[in-house]
Image (cartoon, rainbow, N blue to C red):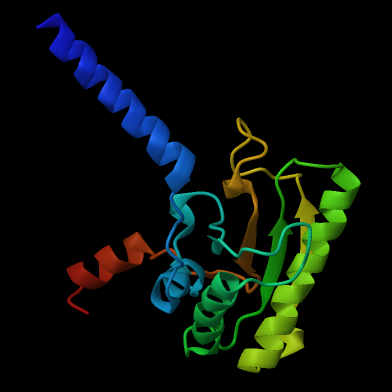
Length: 187
């Protein structure tokens, strides 16, 4: 019985080692235009909910190593973003495109790289989707805002953040006393 358990354990360890060594980490699927719209669309906001909501989305936009050159996978993700930005719910909004890197390499290099990558995204959206440059602002943050600070070199830190810059529409608080008086007076 002990030999069987030992063999099963060794097989499990070997399969985990094999899959992590040869298969590699799983890659998240690109977000589609509808998911992007849900994250960025204008909303009505009730002040009683507290704080001001940030309408933003992190996109996995892959670049060539140490480069601002977009990969095929990145272009697919940006095509979904371009479709979303042209849709009626986002057409009147302006956006900040923020490049982020992991903490590999020097901070000054990462900052410059993230700025070049954000500019490459803006250029792609302009050229391929006709998004007006006036609607897009490119910025790079380098490694300043890690998504996974416990693992500074994690691929999750290498991303493009899209932020809707239009002010949130604040809904007026209903006047409860006036509503009650209208009900009591039959109005």
